[in-house]
Length: 237
Image 1: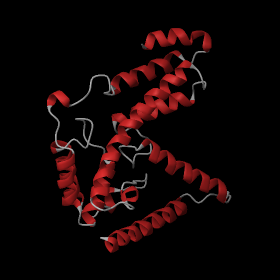
Image 2 (image 1 turned 30 degrees about the vertical axis):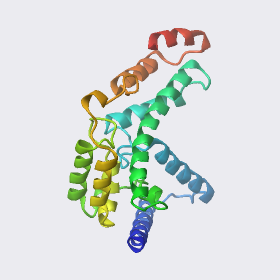
Image 3 (image 1 turned 60 degrees about the vertical axis):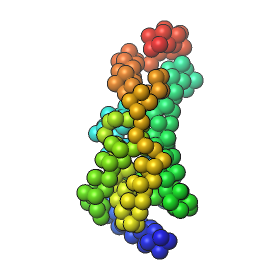
Image 4 (image 1 turned 90 degrees about the horizontal axis):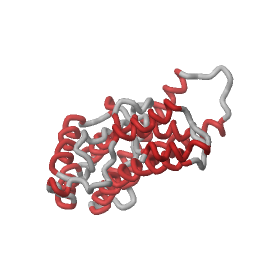
């Protein structure tokens, strides 16, 4: 198990380096960039990726899936809202609710991996960067079939919507390590399908269309100062 994992890590490392070099060749600046500024920007990008756990990691516009589009719109709206205002606080609550839902799914996957013995490697196996590409997958059809099985025959995901694409890349890694079937068996055991009555607890489900409509309504009216914040709260309640 250990040698296969390190082999996987070395290949990933080489692929990432090659991609970075290709990108640099295509976007070579006329004036050399500040190395520190570039490093800080890359660190921030990776931190944002892990914080938001984008469902479509390879989509830089965050618009291909509705849940990614809603979260991105919320983040952009908060950036334009005065910190400390009621609108800012409400947006923060919605953002954290979406992030918590995504973290809950990731935690389930981590629990299964750790139970399989990947205590130290779980976080690395679950990390998917924006550079993830379907072209580099080793066994995409099998990974896709397994993702469908996990979605339909377990409760590792919190929604009936199509499962996040990021987990397709993770399953491809697990298949390469020859632990895909073991992972699926553990998932069925730890997280069996829920009964219809247990699908979602009222009040905890995230209504994506409603969130998006609220943000668009806020943007349409423009950001208000404190004098209008109370009326804004009443409209959203």
